[in-house]
Image (cartoon, rainbow, N blue to C red; front, side, top):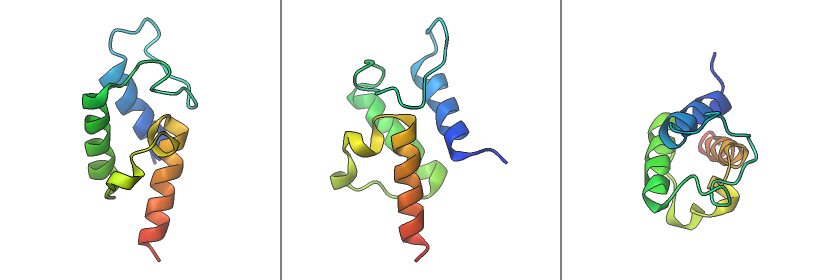
Length: 86
């Protein structure tokens, strides 16, 4: 079974690092600080998260704490899924 982290990492690396010499990103790398994702990229990322994980990202949840690294997104997705299953 493929983990959420592997799914997210693959998407980020394929979508936002295609020309990178390493093509890799650390799980805690800030997308904003690294200049990886612009405003259009954020929209693409949100669409992917909603479709792939079956959750809705509310406007109030569009903050770096939730979406600025692979680890942040994983925690956010798990918390949204946990809330949905209650």
